[in-house]
Amino acid sequence: MKCPAEMIIYMHEYLDEEISAENEQELRAHLQSCKECQTHFHELRKTIALVQSTSHINVPSDFTAKVMAKLPKEKRKVGFQRWVRHHPLFTAASLFIVLMAGSLFSSWEQDHEFSVSKQPNLIVQNDTVIVPKGEVVKGDVTVKNGKIQIEGQVEGDVTVINGEKYLASAGQVTGEIKEVNAIFDWLWYHIKKTATEVVSIFDQEEPEAAK
Amino acid sequence: MEAIVKKRIKQVLKGDQDAYAEVVEIYGEKVFQICYRMLGNRHEAEDIAQEAFLRAYVNIHSFNINLKFSSWLYRIATNLCIDRIRKKKPDYYLDAEVAGTDGLTMYSQIASDTSLPEDDVESLELQETIQREISKLPEKYRTVIVLKYIEELSLNEISKILDLPLGTVKTRIHRGREALRNQLRHV
Ligand SMILES: [Zn+2]
Figure 1 (cartoon, each protein chain N blue to C red):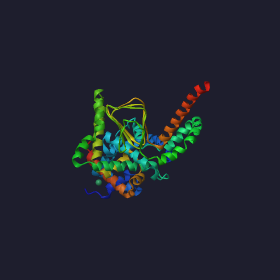
Figure 2 (figure 1 turned 90 degrees about the vertical axis):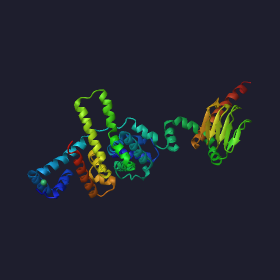
Figure 3 (figure 1 turned 45 degrees about the vertical axis):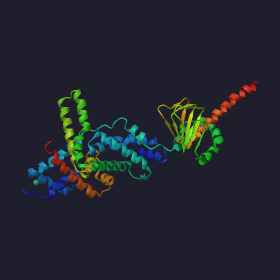
Figure 4 (figure 1 turned 30 degrees about the vertical axis):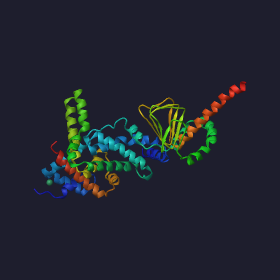
């Protein structure tokens, strides 16, 4: 038996709920009389039911955390604003220090020159400072706009501002290693430094006053 | 839902990254689902779903806030899935079909230790078969079938997501259904 070609189209229209009443009538009438189309229609509906029966696959529980970890680093500005909102008192107090440190912004802008604290046994090659193997460098080492490669020992802190550090397996630093790379860190570094200086000024003044 | 999402997006636009977590939380499940059914592999699906959220975040300023965020997001996800499918070399394709059941096979292995009742084993096998057949569909049919029957989206929405005329979406759904019917009729 030859079926009207549009029957299959009607079936799909029906499945998409877009069939006109007239065509639906026609389809129903045809399905009553045609075994072949009945089977076809039944198979289509079964297919849909099968696809819809596939169970929901649960997303891994750490999915959101993984996505958040992959996002590019937030601009410091907002992180800072949020932080300020959560620490209003401390912010007010530190505003004083920030104002004092205000001039540092301009010094950051201009300060792109390579520089390093002076210690006799440091080797400087282009913009890389090397603490040679077997040598002991006494005191804090500060490198600005350059790299430091530590193969020997530093008795003190190492601070890298706007640069990179490389610590060889034999290298050793007795103090802290700090890297300051963004302007916010830079400012923070100075606030902390100022604070330490302020504290040490008070420490020094006390015995003097006691005299 | 869209209202909360739009509020969060405005926060993200102002630079508040944390607000994005809720957006990921809301749509993670759905995007993962689309990717899983498109790619048929749990591991790849997670990879691409993460990438979709990352792209959405990076391009968030280009999202028109007056439109539906989910449509925009699903578009990114489906495009990434299609790219991934196309990048698979033909010889890899065969592997991919086997790998298509990865997630479920892994589960049936775990499950077999705890000895599942007969019915569950049967239904797992059926699930694998269905996913394998979906994975065999050419990607243009696969996409519309997944969006329509897994995500239960309207034809109109699918046409927006894929940026295709409604008529094209209809044709693809019809052809997709017919292709699947041929593959699944004897199941
Ligand atoms: Zn017929």
